[in-house]
Length: 283
Image (cartoon, rainbow, N blue to C red; front, side, top):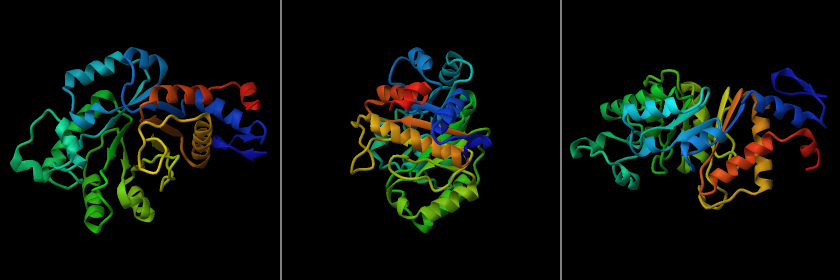
């Protein structure tokens, strides 16, 4: 016998089955996609959470966000990707997809989590959308150009340490060479009470908290491989990682697929976590 999450004693034979039945019934494992890969009505029927991607490129009108919230079923969890102007400088190619024109004189004040009036104003507008959607998590994804440095550590601390979060948790996804500075990431996450968002099939999170957030970008030599189609073996590894995370400290694990095949992969993984005990014993 061994102790599982919530202090439940389970046998090695039935442990994974019992744990997953309990956790999925309580929606401790939340499976979704980064964006809507199908009609929203169909998506709401299939999943209980989504990471809204369009907010990264352009923040919606408040009326649009209110419609999204009203159309979603009760208990549906919205997560939001923060507006790109907060994290990405004006030289980033992603700015080309932004319909809103930013005054040239103000562009230098945006991006890289700089503690500037422009970034704080952009966050306030992002938070407004989070509040309308009652967003559980807001993902702050930094570009590789925002690498580890004393200045950028200071930016993270000063910006994320000052912003109002409302009832929304912050999940920070640093990229580039931050993976080589796990201790610094751990220290920042602990100091600022933020989630370290990672692709769990590539690297471990630097901290373990009540909420974990995994964004799956495909497997390959680069940091992302959006054409990747996850195999059953990959999904089994993912299932094991999710359960291991819940055994540590997490009460809730978000697993967001972010690839061309994300709809099929998310459906397959959700079905796997909800499988019957008999099915699992034959795997």
